[in-house]
Length: 113
Image 1 (cartoon, helix red, strand yellow):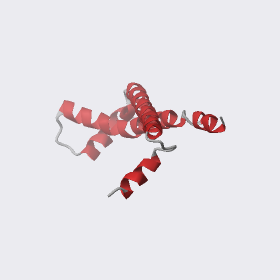
Image 2 (cartoon, rainbow, N blue to C red; image 1 turned 90 degrees about the vertical axis):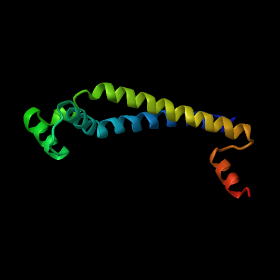
Image 3 (tube, one colour; image 1 turned 30 degrees about the vertical axis):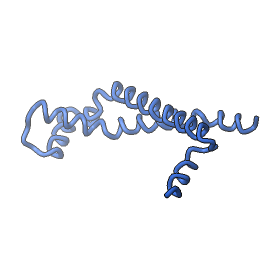
Image 4 (cartoon, rainbow, N blue to C red; image 1 turned 180 degrees about the horizontal axis):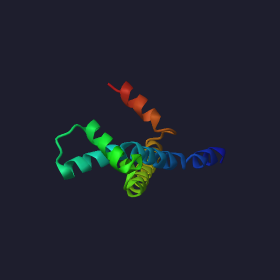
């Protein structure tokens, strides 16, 4: 019974970890996506650094994160679902193969000739 509680007590970790990873990915990557999209729309010949400076000078630094809420929600949601489902699948596969932990399967496969 204690094993079931401890495994159920940690079932939320991949879901939350994936959500945090997705949100971080969106917040860090969004300025680059914003610059890329603007450069494609305007077809400028300047470098990315020149375009970033111009954007910040004309519209302020917050312009790099315009449209972030939609990207943030989508990335956080999909990453959380992906990581949570993967962890659940790994646990089910390990259990079906008679193991307590999915990481044991990798060691077993590495030792098999």
